[in-house]
Amino acid sequence: MAQNKGGKVIQMLSPENYIRKKARSLPIYECMVNEDWEDTQMVQLSVVRQHTNGNVTVCFYLVDLMCLGVKDTHYLFNIPLTEYREQLEQMNEKMSVIPISYELAHNIVFAGIEFADEYGFKPHKDFTSITRFMLKEDTDDIELIEIECGMEGKPTYVRSPFDDNSKVQRIIAQLEKTAGPDNYIFMDEDDFEDDQYDDVDLDGMTFDEKKGLFLDLSKQIEKETDEEDERFVPLVNSLIDDLVDIDQYNKYFDELYLELNIETDDNDIPNQLLGIERDSQLIPNYLKDRFIDIYYLNTENTKQAAKELKLFKKESNGLPGADLLELQNLEIEGSRKYPGRLKEYALKYPDYSLIRILWVTELVTSEKDLQKIPEYPFKFETFFPERTTIHPIERFKFFLLHAFVAAMENNLNKIEAFGSVLGEFNFTETEEEVLGTIISMFKVNYLLTHLR
Image (cartoon, rainbow, N blue to C red):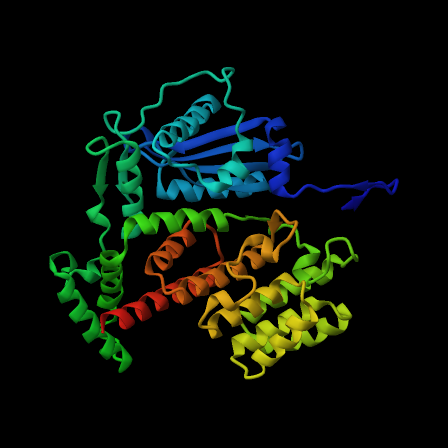
């Protein structure tokens, strides 16, 4: 909210809502694309619109014309032209980019989407919810330009260096179903293989040979010898790939993606993040900002965060968010006070989403029978009733709960599907590391339990 001189309240739009509602009214400034896009059919595209203040909003689209359509997309909102030019220079360092007409840019994006849709592949979630609104509506008013997709008309999936075996199997299974056998092409980019694993010919080993090597390496790692660590990770992944049932994996992937595809807004700090009902009281923005600062400081320096928290508790005058930050600090420190304090605050704030999630996560990790936990299975509406958008911090805690649930259910297909779903969403580097470490730990524990 903001006020003009007459005291009238003006509703300020978040960048996402501005793009959704107003971006199409801004004039096109320019569109850029990688010069070799027609040869590679992998397109790095940007559409730039200019505001009346001279700044620009830029949307970037990674379009795979071979098979998968819009694989990734993001935006920079209302930035100075100088900042945009710096971004463009950075892109030019990696690839040669050239200007193109808006009409060509539009046709590239929608040709990729339409081709991918024929085979059941949907565009990146942020395209559907945000960045498509930087483009004009796809009507007959747009000049139609023929864009080549696929290879000789066939969908052609080119494995990227970031696609693990489970993701590859999921995409190929989708092509088998929608295109049919022999009606698609799969290309594995061998050039991206990591040389550090050349001494382990996993493809040439039987399952029993890999099992034996895994058990040997596990003993060495338990003795804290790091010599074999480089072989351990790909070995674990190879064994998991051998054990996963692709149909079950696909089923869980679809279910988890549907459940966890939650819209977030990091430009708005809702009252609920600090444990207050939406409109029950006005929380000053500086307190909300302090909450966020201390939350992330906790992940970097718990001792400094504890000092800041003492001041915040005085400033916030009893906000539940202060107790949430205390719990976070105790948990990261590994304090013995954490379980007792968590139970106390869970009883004190039964409707505070973040503390409810922490409490249920504690129950999940300590209760052998998940069916005994009243809220199980844990749905979005269980913790965020009557909300459609949440803060990224809330989403991370919700994902963390689902990670522990997947592990406690001891279902390898679900664990592997959850790990793949994580790659579909954006997290901070620390959050990615935490979630990735948990999933890796669960995989290793599963193998140790079932292979010994």
